[in-house]
Amino acid sequence: MSLDHTTRPPTAPVGSWRLEPAESTVEFTGRHFFLLPVRGSLPVSSGHIDIAPDGSLVSLDTTVAAAGFETGNPQRDTAVRGPRFLDAERHPELRLAGESLAEDLSLTARLEVKGRATPVTFTVDELTEQGERVVVRATARVDRHACGVGGMRGLVGAALLVRVRAVFVREG
Image (cartoon, rainbow, N blue to C red; front, side, top):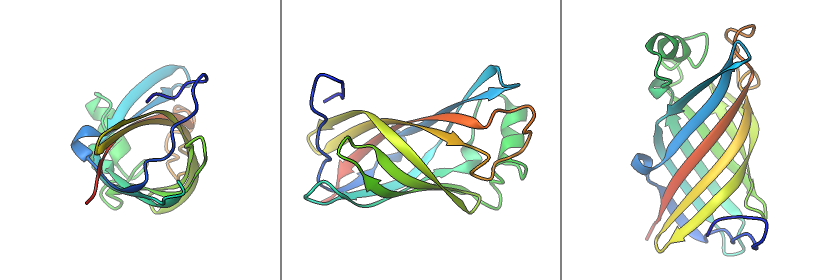
């Protein structure tokens, strides 16, 4: 079921769900020189979500691999994986821990980057249940400076648009 303004939003899929990393994606768009768009991705490592029978969030924990940062520009990718930005050697994972799930399925969570946790809210753009699988598409605006990723402040914009496609499989 897709979310739109003419239908009632679906309810959260109750139960325990395991994230399928190979089928899930984290993509982002930022700005270089505050004008030129830069698009890239990070590989999903793992994830798990538990939804209570009343639709409330019991737990959400997901990770992505910082060393997998990819924009298609090897020089930029190496720099961003380095200590001025993600510091992937010392902080190999970015982690998202859920805090609450609203009726419209917007997710309030804490994004941990380089050991610093920052609040972020994801808006669910689409939720499709396919039997024992759920596909969620969500977006969020993330301030990289608030996350401790402050390199090249004068050349790279602070705001990132993050798009997630998460595929979950029901756990027994």
